[in-house]
Image 1 (spheres, rainbow, N blue to C red):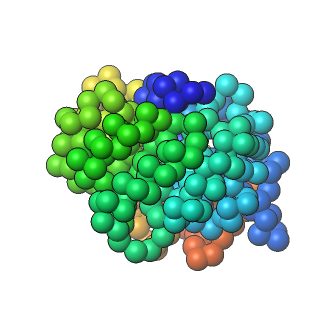
Image 2: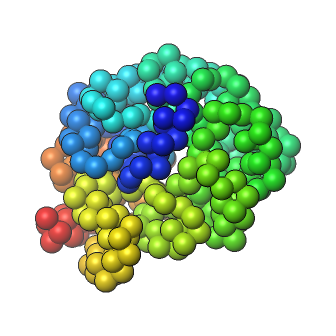
Length: 300
């Protein structure tokens, strides 16, 4: 896809991040991954994000990423594949080039490593990545990589292939300033952990979609919630929040890193050989997996 096509796809429906399965030796397991991606592609998600945050991007080597993207493209059919990209500028540029060579349709630029940076540094970082590829690029405002509206506007002027803005700050004031300033120049994507918890607020701020982590294992429920949200069916949204998402949030909050580990547990419970999470994360306990299993069973 060219940048405008991926921009359109990003804004056309619910999105998700497949988990990255690992085998007993802690290596990427392509066959279980392809089986899971193929299953997800049968539901309404116009774009899947390979090697994203839920896909444990932070635990992957740069060399693993194009292999994962290639496997996703093989399994996804007509579903577009956007890859995670990040770390320092030189590494991010290298990853972007390798993803393009592997056939990816776009990249999501995750925060750089560790240290805070001034707006001029963030501008140079994003511009270097955009300049390195012909693919569409989406920036992820989160943690130590928070672009202000004026910086984002400069980047839009300088980078025609900058097509998307994902927010994980929860700062509705900032995101509303961004949507007001950039208008339809970008596609806007909610990116808070368990995004459904914040979806109504982000919709009011001009964000038409978000990435659903639970789509990994309850895609029908995720689509039902999204359809109700877009239809203004508040009663259905509240019912699903109370019966599924708030209990899931309580489980997720038990330990740091469970925003990823609980999703991977859900994928295993859905019948896919996702393997364990890589350190520094840790998996759910057996008792916690039983709690998640019961929650899933109640919503089939």
